[in-house]
Length: 277
Image (cartoon, rainbow, N blue to C red; front, side, top):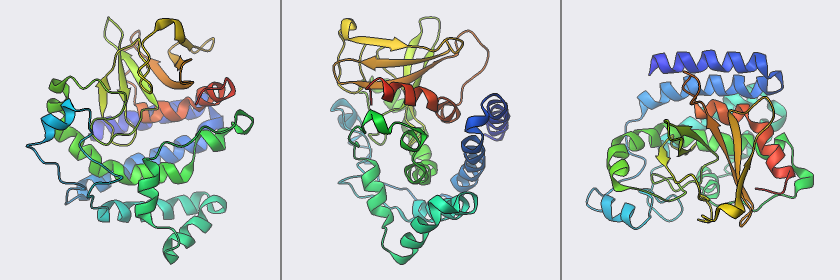
């Protein structure tokens, strides 16, 4: 784990030099990855109880193992981590964070509500408002990160079971979150989707929309940017949704999709400008 973190931090430095525009966001991510590893070691209890007798049935029925909207979850340790993240964010960006932190400390903002809201699909924002502030929401990012250490433990615990189950849904089998990014792997270029909420990655058909299930190739497409062919954006013209896909098959590099998601925010902006959400 330590070696992976070191490699990721080196990658972040490389991207900071190549894309100074995202330097601050990448620097924040680097700090958070270090914190994540520390807090993962501190997790003592399960964020949710997964009934082993129901795992296979839930997966067969297309149900994620954890229900954050109607299920019974223990957010105590995640909230402690969120508090630390919020304080770190305030030091770096007080203009955006101080008011949120003060309202949180007064109880005007409840962590449980923030978590619940993060699992509700947000409506598409008008393309005229498409900019970095819309494609990267700091508060949403901190809420998502606060759950990550606990969920990574569950993801690792049930990884083999899920792989054997043949899960074929476009949302995460652990937490139900929709993916924002994925990658192509192997000689056949199989597509794998990545959940930034719990770090789980699963196989998904290449000619199929993860969001609406459309598998008609006439209405599925993708676009790339000249000089950045390893990055593509898969789009569906039935539901007007998109997902970023990384193709590192021609290199020996192993992408960290948390980093790649930040380093490709310009693709989110382009997709929004084209009317996809």
